[in-house]
Length: 123
Image (cartoon, rainbow, N blue to C red; front, side, top):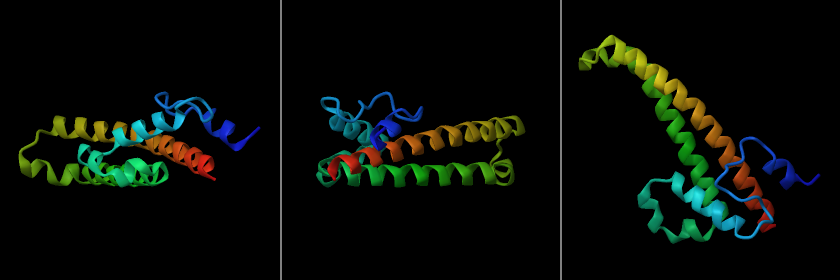
């Protein structure tokens, strides 16, 4: 079984991206990756013309989001009471951040898989 087949059989492969070898699969990968970035990046043709660069930047973006969520979660109990946030809201926000970290971890795996497939396709 090829490396690409192993990648796309992963449960982390994004549903929005066609499997490598299918018509327009790279276009769907680029669209999905671009949607992960802040809207202001849409104007940078350097990213959209280089799918491998786009995948790398999307991976960095997700990693930074994970760091921000970790900081928010780790500092909630210390900083939010001083801002007048109720204890119940603080606890709910910590649970929300924990859920978001799980979602971001899955997203990071998906970006890595798509990036690996794009790199394999360009070789």
